[in-house]
Image 1 (cartoon, one colour):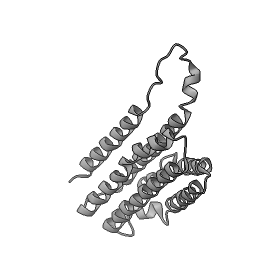
Image 2 (tube, helix red, strand yellow):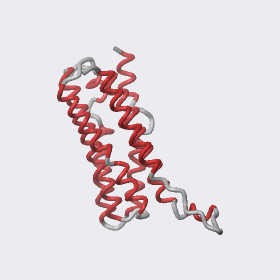
Image 3 (cartoon, rainbow, N blue to C red):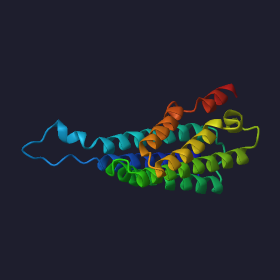
Length: 196
């Protein structure tokens, strides 16, 4: 399989996941007293959608950068990429559950578990690419010790524990903190590619 086909497939899956999430945003039932006030009851659903949209966008942008470093696609990379897409495919379900329960502790914790699994799948894919292309590869030079990846996993685990111990809104803040850390596509890879 070529890198282009791998990238196109991944782009398509992520686009479908975003579409599924937006389809879960239901318009409030119309009634004689329909007003903007009815939308205020749906803010948890909308907020969880925005957070998940940002996360999927971050994965999409960084996946694009990551694949720019690939010169040879292996079977292991294909399976690692599918592993990542599997966990990303659970984001719409956990997003809807978390928002639909107004950030109850277990749905918020499960959302974090899916985020941890996505981050771990990302690290596995990244490490397979480095192993295939060698320690002097552009990707290895760019990510180094990957403090952002490690920070993300540690913060997600902390957020899961916080959610379980009845502080789901604090957990939500920690998830948002990780998103802000990654909001700008990872320029380490871009800089390394321009340097080579």
